[in-house]
Image (cartoon, rainbow, N blue to C red; front, side, top):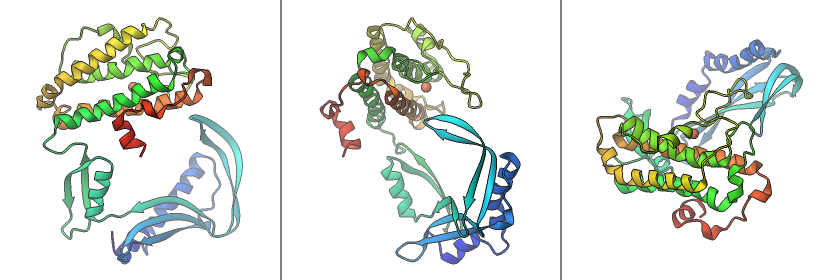
Amino acid sequence: MKEEKTVKLAYHDPGFVTQKFILNVLARMNRELGANFEISNFELEIDLKHSDDEDVGKIQLFIKSLQNQKYFLEYFFLIENYFRFEIHGKEFFLSKNERIHIEDSHKFQKFEIDMIAQSTCFFVEDQWLDQEKKYTLNTFAPFKPNIEISDVLSMIREGWGFADYLFECVITPEALQESPIQLRHPFIFYLGHLCAFEKNQIFKYLMKKKSDTEAFDELFERGIDPLVDNPSKCHKHSAEINYIGWPDLKDLLIYRDKTRKMIEENLKEVLLHTTKLMAQKGRVFTMVHEHTMMHVETLLYMIQELDPQFKQKISLEKLNYDFGKVYIL
Ligand SMILES: [Fe+2]
């Protein structure tokens, strides 16, 4: 947190450098989106939120309209339900003193930085301070320096628990062949993909181990990535979009369990493989866990679009203990 005088100088300086920088967004919109903002009709305004000891804890930045005015956008994009719509020609109105909220900037004391780290299951790994000890740069790490195998294990098991819950307790077995979102593989692909990603990243790329499940490692290596600029097209991917010969669920579950057992049994060896950057501090495990959690989110989007006949009635009793402890309470 900082004194008010310092903050004001940083966010709304007398030379109007920050204002010019902030209003430049309107100039860009004029240039790139065919807008017609008259920039002199706007100014920067900041709100300072004080904490108990009167230091500033939060700064909010606004672009304020200095008069009633209307403006026009030649085209812009509207993102809704994960689809991007291109809109052509729309008029907007702003009344005098109306503000467009563009930024929140938060300031923290050292103990608050530690609290943020802890509340998100991270630790402050390194911290650098300026000479006056007013500014700090921090790196957060998921594990303490003396990394515990049990911490890594509980992290990756948590991801497995989430994924299993969706596959086993939220969708029906018949749903596995469904692909409710256009340009995404059916659910069954993701069952294999989560394991293939772990297997490839940990054992193929990092540990350089030969695999006895190469066909699955390859088939499930990559999902479908629509091109950002043209979502009707995809990046290159290992499995065909209209692939119909997906392996049996039984074989996939064997693949999954075998991969998980391999990870659990080799965890220590991987962590000791410290000449490789991705092994240090358990990075590869953090990465595969993040990948699993990212797909849990993707699967939820798919489940949202799934026909109700393919969904099970959610039962909280089926949630395992850790899952309930961390996320339901
Ligand atoms: Fe993926």
